[in-house]
Image 1 (tube, rainbow, N blue to C red):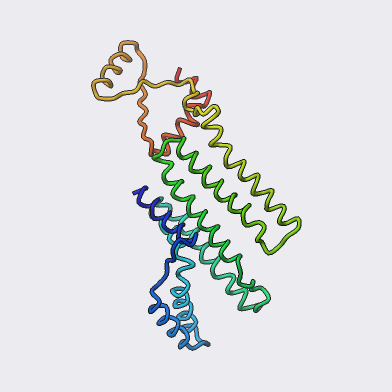
Image 2: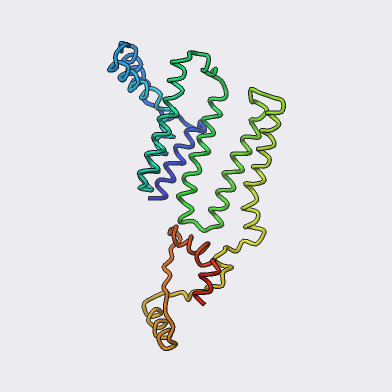
Length: 262
């Protein structure tokens, strides 16, 4: 399931990078545009219908972010966070339209290259989702490498586009400095892991467990503990288990816990 969702997120991200376009068939778009133009304003029902049809027309722009929020809700089961995400998405889409309707074109930015840059930015955000999902089943070194690669790609893209931004001067220089600092910060975790001290906190802790491969090993260890008059604690572990990794990094590394388990 995690791999399937990750592939879907990557597919959505690639559409934001312009590799391909997710949109309704041209015949359907034409039909919706004609239907929207026929709607009469001045009534709540007409305005609602125009909004619903316009939402379908602009679906290529909203498919990836909306799908990302829905997939997060489906995968995590966190209804509260998912509801907040959908509410924030709706407010982000609706408030600019309300402001434009109230204040006119004074607040409406001109169409330009910034629209493609925002789209690309959403692509990098969507790529963070599969890494978040896959780090539950991937070894730590690979998840660290993926996070670093994403950060390097994002800040490298930011540095690449800084000269094409609409503003210059100190603002452009500040963007360049942020991009360079972000590149170094993104590369540091992977470099520390591959070329430095990459032992995890769980490996550094003094709490040690005897690996059990089968029922016979378990019964043997229970007999030894019983003969020595010692209690037994079983630690069940899986690479995809988030709580297990939290135990490794935090609980078993706590000095108070270590002292109790000696």
